[in-house]
Length: 445
Image (cartoon, rainbow, N blue to C red; front, side):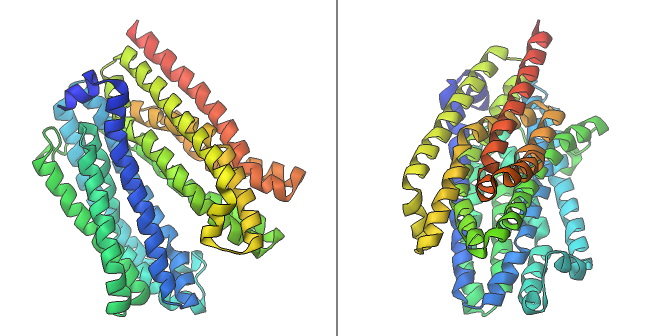
């Protein structure tokens, strides 16, 4: 069935079969994040909410660590399956699974050992220490479950098991949502309870992923006897996995930089941007889901040197993603005030938030180009291109745009910086993609 999906099924149908479950799992994760925030806010303890917020980036960091072996491994496995090197794919799969467990345990130990220093770096003070420490401790203990979950959830899609990958994510999120109020209020665990629910959700998801690989997969394995890989294969995994993890880190970096620049214009501007970014995340995650969902399809056909089908896949991916990005831009720009009002019904917040949301959405079509290009670089093993794109849109290019535009246009310049970064990054992505396709054509001649 997987060969038919990757080699024979019509491109739109195959792409959607892989991408839709990823999009759905991302939407479920977004719902979980909002519900999680809601339950934490229900405590009514400002210091607790602040403490959890300060430590929240650690969870994003765990996902970034998991991406090293999840996205790096899935990239290598997709190409190996396309080259019909099933045994090598099994070895790579087993290696990524077991090394992520070892790596996760090491991260847990480091986080617990340097807890005081890390909490200080996160900005935790006397008022928030009690709550931040409680949340941090359980996230640190459960780091291995969070890091590990990113590996099978990505690797399963290389064999066309996108539904199983989605199911694990949904199961974990549902468990988390159910146990949030139980641990936070029922067992009176507060901040620690929120972290416990998060870790438990990931553990349950991990158990399902183990079952899925054992019972549903035909060409993947957990067996330690298969985990012998060459240094070159490890390099291939890391060269794609590390840039992929940087993308998550850059998102946090972007939010911190934006808030720092907006503080000059008042805390109400920071609050409005926080809402605008949360709304923007809804459309962004859908685009990310459709982009990353087709990655195994790209990697498989690149490995199989099927240039004609690969070009058809890329043509469909770019047109669909850019069209969807344009649709989101139009809808969000029209209904921006009404959307912001749902989150906070204050005139100044609605006015500022609507303008911010519109500026964020202007670059969506260009962001689509960057997303597809990043996924292609990861899928075909182009480490240089993946690295450049991962540090550009919300990193180097964004910082340059922020400094230049804020100095020239002030407050408006800060707001338009992301759109400027999207345009420049899309141009960089186009150059990288032309080189990749030229290289593929030369190989096949």
